[in-house]
Image 1 (cartoon, rainbow, N blue to C red):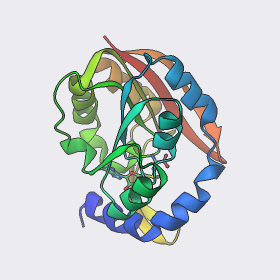
Image 2: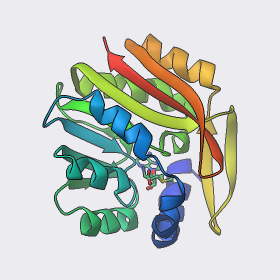
Image 3: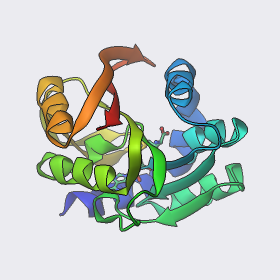
Length: 198
Ligand SMILES: C[S@@+](CC[C@H](N)C(=O)[O-])C[C@H]1O[C@@H](n2cnc3c(N)ncnc32)[C@H](O)[C@@H]1O
């Protein structure tokens, strides 16, 4: 089965449970770093927004947020939790926003669900829809690995390059790395990147 079908179905099943447990990954420090890089009243895309924890934080700080996700159940939660934001059901590799749409793009714990062969294409699309000097902020897995396993009682597909390769791809798509590090949050290690559109 195609990975998007597995993940859409999987996240529809575990949406409530995932969001109940989401607080174990406390990303407030990284989110503060992100907003410090953004202009006032910035427009931000949250790719793979889930139930909207990042959108909620950004809206509370006065930003305008569009969230996209492939899971309708996740989006149902996000719309209830963050009525001020706009949410669209969409595969992030198929986004079709006009050029210069966003000052920032954030994607937490989501790009690792996109097959790694599409990561380069995804960074290119992010580049195209971002304003000049826009900020890209995301995390992916800390080790190269691809496959599916049991997550919160359902099957979920994951796909990661090594941090070095991910950094290289981001740079190849003409982003300048501001900061990157492997960080442990909620007992899990992820590779975190802040980059600026050149
Ligand atoms: C682990 S959750 C993270 C949600 C949210 N970013 C957070 O920090 O809580 C991963 C999310 O990515 C979404 N997702 C997976 N593949 C996607 C794709 N190709 N396009 C858009 N969303 C996707 C899933 O439906 C799920 O809501």
